[in-house]
Amino acid sequence: GGHNLLFTGPPGAGKSMLAARLPGILPPLQSKQRLEVTMIKSLSSGGSGVNMASHRPFRAPHHSASMAALIGGGRQAKPGEISLSHNGVLFLDELPEFSRQTLDALRQPIETGEVEIARAEAHITYPANFQLVAAMNPCRCGHANDPELSCHRIPQCINEYLGRLSGPLLDRFDIRIEVPPVSLRDMLSPDSGEKSADIAQRVANAQKVQFDRNQGCLNANLDGELLRDLARPDEDGQVLIDKITNEAANSKLRSRGYKRIIRVARTIADLDGCENLAARHIASAMVWRGMASDVKE
Image (cartoon, rainbow, N blue to C red; front, side, top):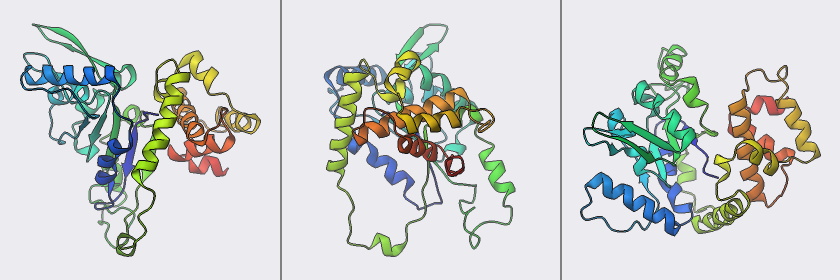
């Protein structure tokens, strides 16, 4: 569905590895998307030695990257990492280590799918329709949930570390997943799990349904009447929606958060092959947004 994703877990849990595997389960670029990706890459490199794009971009800038490098700019107003990630994945590892000003500059492009670069010599709008994937430790030492390894500054360490991220930026992550450390026994297990090819086929089928039904966009970009028309719940789903939209039942949920829950639920329903949203789809979307306690209630 193109949803933004945040991994949180201790060092060595596999957050970066999971993010790097994401492009492998995404559908191939369409002809128009290949052209767009190639044109942006050509602009960034000065137009020399660029071949037609054959796969979705996966960009992983270091946390020391400047705002101009990430958003775009410079004297020639070149595209930045968010435009080079167009139609692909932008991965920000160690998210709180990026400067807060640089991260907050991502907020508008995430919503609009484009970025405007204004300079004295040029005023250019670049496409920036990317899937944002980020990873972070629960605290600076990385072991907040492990009493044996955590530092003596817990919980102050957690609050200071998370305080580097603004609420509006965190609100733009549709899915927030806790990644626990993998035991050595599980790592050595012969069970390889589900194959990437099988997952990729399910994703491709779901995205085809979305493009055909959503007037050419993914569920992450649904809004307004189109979102209301295409994300209709069944009877049990409506009961749960009535609960989460009740201000008294969940005062911390805002309009943007509610829409993101419904978009994710729509994607879960698509993967499940269901036309309407069932209560289980909405509950899963709430859990993935970090609202497990509200579902239990």
